[in-house]
Amino acid sequence: MKLGTYIISGIIFLFAITGAVYMLAPHEYELVFFDTPINLPVAIWSMIPAVLLFIVSILHIAFYGTKLFLNHKKWQKDARELKDAIYWAILKEPKKHIFLTDKIKSFAPILNVSELNPKDSVLITDERILKAVDIVKRINSGEYINLREIGLDSYLSKENELVIKTTINRLKQEPSFAKTILQKREAYSQKLVDKALDIAVESWSFDEISKYASLIDKKRFYKILDLIDQNKKDNFSLDNLRKFIDYKSFECRDFLRVAKSIIKKFSPDTNLAFVKEMIKSSPKAETAYLYTLFEYEMRDNIKRFFDEHDDGDFKIFRVYEELKASGYNIKLHDIINDKTACNES
Image (tube, rainbow, N blue to C red; front, side, top):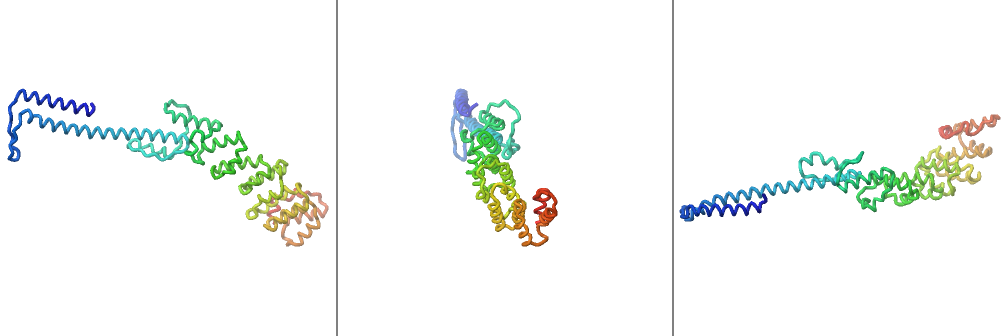
């Protein structure tokens, strides 16, 4: 029974009881209260305790009704929070949610730091959660979904698994988008930047990729050199090659690898000048210079180089030179490689 109905019914009941008592005992009764005589009809005296009980019952109902109402509101709020937590967990972006009821608080906070990955279809009616499940399913199947168009881009972090996957899906469909990622790389995760760099290394011209030389690590740089060796990189030039060479971190084998790639691309004078330039910045490039001299079979320059260095330096090259001078038909690559050449320098 609602409180309003109870009050109206109670008032009618009180008046009915009072009227009945008055009909049975219409006389008055005097009661002295603190030396003050109070003379009221018997019906009124009988009504007073009933009224007090009625008021107390109203307060009792109001108190527990309010308590029940507030508890119901807590459950409703927790239900909304729980659905919201499930929604963001499905989208791989768990967010902090505050729960009010003890039973929900005992387990639901795990969703604040968890991700959900539905394995199969399930019968639910909540449209928002169904939409989240559908988004995840489509992205995982290889479809590109524009998160901005569905209003999710500002809510999902750049490290979010779904953000990365859907962008990779776009890169597969639209490789040219790699340029946008590299131009605005602060807005993308490192994983996407790396993916864009891989695409650039594989498919861009040498001139284009040289604009992002500072982002290219040695592994990708070696891949570029492999493609140059295979004549699969257009617009190859020494000016752009300089952008990739980190004289502080390059080791002997790195300089040697560069020398091997340029030997057949330009004239001997141009290549030797370039390697000498590397030596000025780092003495670790001397092996690359000596290797270039041997490739061009410049005996006078080789002898002059050996004379300028101690007999204990560049031993493997000295051995090779002695073998060649003794008439042995040995190719440079038979005994000199990155490991042997650089370990001896």
